[in-house]
Length: 423
Image 1 (tube, rainbow, N blue to C red):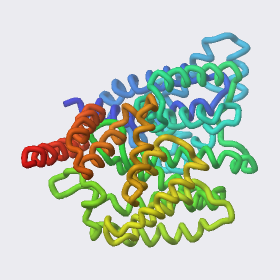
Image 2 (image 1 turned 30 degrees about the vertical axis):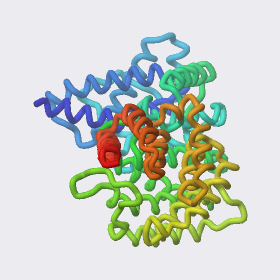
Image 3 (image 1 turned 180 degrees about the horizontal axis):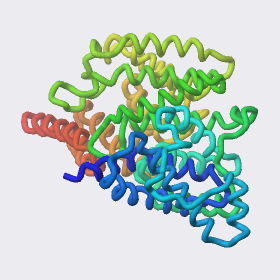
Image 4 (image 1 turned 45 degrees about the vertical axis):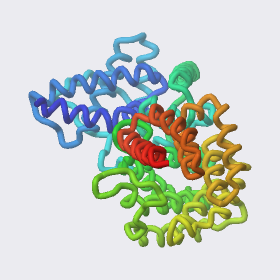
């Protein structure tokens, strides 16, 4: 087993994007492609150096300085005018051997605060809102392109093309991704909110890999949002977002049973819900009260209804349906429509729920979204249309790569076949 390579791989997974984003804020002469190249080369250099001399205490800091020096040395070997401009901008440079690299300028202990600064930096007004979100998810949060595509409802090709255009724009216009002046921070808060929200959702319901929940992403989102509140830049929407995340975190322990199998909401053991977190979420909800109601206020209200319902059957589904209906006004998208249709079904408006679900099947992305087809499969099962239920469940089974979700759907299929054989 190569322990050094394993350590480097772990740092790569956690810090590659952040290191690229940090270098982009270092000099106008560095573009995304060059930043990725020098950071990648620094990781390769780390494997050889750490095998010989041992692993440094500040691993990310070591790689940052190695990457920065590689960039400066490239500039030194480049055209004189460019080199001189870079030297003036960056305060000088010198050829540095790996033996002398130290971790100055990259404080791993302050990574949370530093990450929030990077998030604000990537929310640059010269970039389109969707581009801001995509480059932040890739370079600050380290999400893979596949995960970004899933959380934004885009194709992988669409994300790749957007990143190519972003790289070109940053290079051509010399956009420097640095934290803005304090008076400009508040203008970027809406984008920061959206990224934190997407990061939490990817952790709460991971779209890639074997894990359904990635608690580290949820914790990362909560810590960034808390820092946003504590530094005085956050607002009422920030408090509402915090409330929403706390309500969802409170239900973590009930989402899997003792055997590690996924448990649906109606079967969850509500005694396992963290009532201290629910109370804390309620406190932030009160702090968020404002004349203007954001989508985070509405989603937090929906989560609150779930968290305060003694059981699934007594949940106020009519209120939840009304809240989703209101959410569609400010945030019209097929994912909200899906949840609205589910709430309608459980509130007694079954046909209206079915109509929306079937309309969503015409959407090119949603038709391949396993939750849409599993919802249809479940509802037709509850309404004893077993043939239709089976067709939708098998369709949804092919549309998820998650072992836990596959196992859950397979359980439903076994129950369905048992009912059909007994009918």
